[in-house]
Image 1 (cartoon, one colour):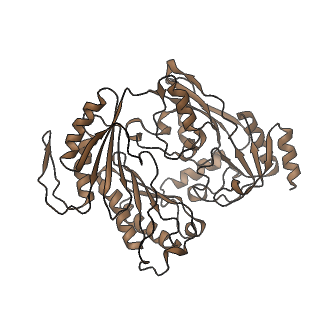
Image 2: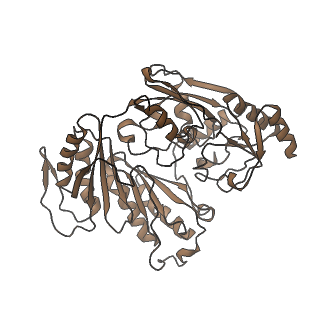
Length: 459
């Protein structure tokens, strides 16, 4: 099809369009055109043109996570929502906000702060837009106390593959009509529809915040007497990070002191790690001191600070490669570059396995790994050096799944990996609900026009 035909059709619909360039690639796949709609109606016009000309479309906002997920089977039109960034509709009296998909989370936070309110999410990727936040389902430390975007979403406007505009929910917290539609689209990587705007439930800005930080050395060589807190014995006699954290974290998360988040940063699995606990609201400093006393009995160097540690609320930075290659044979320098990021989820009873698994898998694969994430919500991210040899990435992923998914409780997802490495592994792992998800895709996008192949199972 001639580029002029599509360009003319989009321009006739009143949508700005340009030829795609190198910076518009989606997981390595370059589209032919970039459409720049400014409203839900213009997104609908784009999708009607795509339907008429049998074109596949992928939506983007800030472009910060276009390399996440699998490459699309085809990508003709990149629907760039950067122009959908009008000031949010903030109903402070109702504690709700409606924002277009192209509004960045940082801009939204600034607008809400003027009214003394916030969207209680910590988004770990700077520049993330409202649409990208929902499409990838990403969340940060305070998911433990406030939930994820999926939990705070009360209304959404989406454009379906045939250009139909669908609305779900409303502008008040009590209106939950169609709420499940918003949940369905969250985390779907744009494979069911394009999010045009979203309405969220808000929280007042906390009166105060305080952090408790502590260091866990590895290994702990001496035996420490068991520590007792409110009648609960915390066994600190073990000699590694896993046992130390497994001993103290349940007492912290179940404490009446109500922490908002409990995070861990382990920049190199062979070295020490840092634990940080966030306390918000009334008497935050006093509650933090009480938590400091609790943590300090089991972990070293516990202290209260008014500022978060520099790594707080961000994805892990990969460790630098070090040492000779391991048993796989190829050198670490033979990788093809690019971010290598995995997400690990587990259940509370297997907390230790969430961060011991990456350590064990890294040793077996001959790579170095950085782990960071929530000790309260049991969601962690693992980063490998970007030039890790592809076979080692595959070996690490397989080994990690062997440790995490044996009983069907854990989950390992490869969020980002270079093309050569990605070809050697399954990004998503086993998903029992895949047949149901395929039927949902068939219902919403029978012609596979929206981000085809980007999601699990090739959806």
